[in-house]
Image (cartoon, rainbow, N blue to C red; front, side):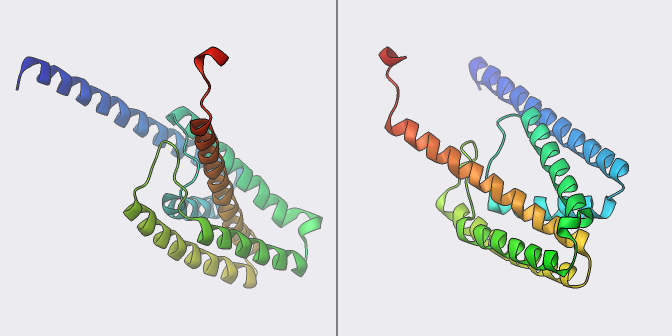
Length: 201
């Protein structure tokens, strides 16, 4: 190995270490924020259910991915807060009281699951997928979504409205992430077809 090769390898290793440390810090910050929100809200079961359902399905369904760990942290925090607030509203609001609201949640959850079935996986601009990955991820996303919607229906029909509502809201968050990813792909393709000329800027 020449001196130039050794220097390049050292730089690559240093970059990899920086990336790993950034990822570790981001995950630690996400865990700390999740535990803090659970402790303040007292909704440990609902937040645990959200994290399990979201991380399992999101991995295969795809969608929007932040370009930095800091942005990822704040987006993840916003999604978690929105799901907790939405679940409190579903459980406590007079507008969502009664058996009619359960039927709405059942239909809402089914519609979200149908979207995931039809459009998974959605690749992010900074996380492209090859043909094999698209087939494998799509199949796994549909299997996971089917299992989760079955759990969602069991919870809602058994009277566990809060827990079932969390799964519905989780699928809603994933659908919105997929739509954002699809929109960014469309915007990038449009920009590639109609690039701005330097003289037009």
